[in-house]
Image 1: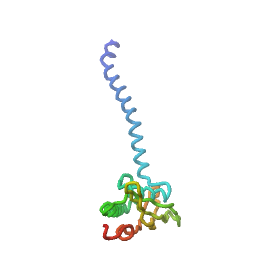
Image 2: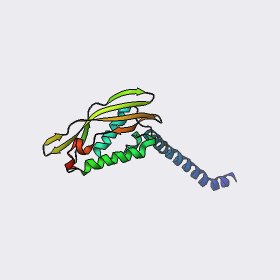
Image 3: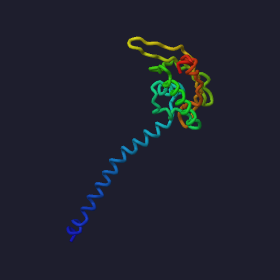
Image 4: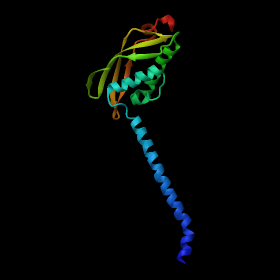
Length: 169
């Protein structure tokens, strides 16, 4: 009798073991994915790191990873500003190959607010020659926001007029 009862239940026991094994196997990747998402939303550990990501994304023209370094209250406005600047760069008669920045100076860190200043210049490559624009100061206000540093404001020189002649835009 016991043997007959066990033979009727074993498929359900086996199914239960399989479900538990799969759930455990899926729990690890799911937990990892949640952790990665939480870390991605935390901003940067230092004010200059947030600015470095912003400038790197602007130079590359790719906005992946940009939103996480922008202050949540101003994110949409800052993305529009970033895209407008990038459009001016790309729409020029001769778009730059990249932007380069000098050292990132962090000043006035207090009460979760920092001012980051750097000089940025554009670089063009032609065959085996390269050409650089003049260096212009960029100023960023960076704030602590939800556990990380994020860009709050960007004061950049005009692309058309400062980096290239207006007639080249």
